[in-house]
Length: 145
Image (cartoon, rainbow, N blue to C red; front, top):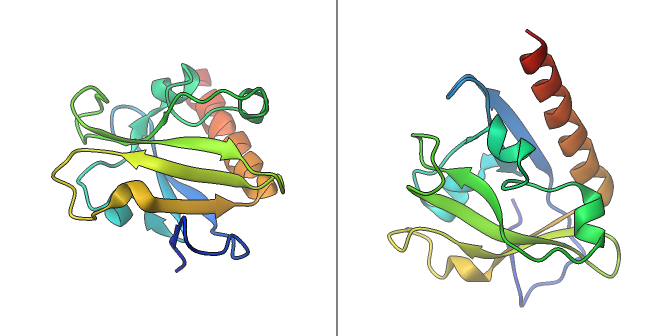
């Protein structure tokens, strides 16, 4: 597993994936290199409910990244499903080489990973778009039932 800091090279790409969970109706646990982001950061924060994704609080479509949208994205929340209780957020930006960078992490100050604000992941554009499409499809199927 490669977890990069700002001092490392961005040539090695991480792999973004997710797990679909039945918590709070439908939730998504984001993973980097097959490890949940909450576990990497060292918190109990886990899957975010689908409605956070739909409202743009969680990961955002590529069009919003390309338009320079810089507000932090929620990538994991408290097991209760409320991001106001506890959450992990980070900036998700597109780099000069079109990869997607997760950086500037913020979370509960009790996190066991310090300094987590130096943590950075580099994801290929195709990987990011594929995960977004799959999540949107899961939401569409869930809401159709």
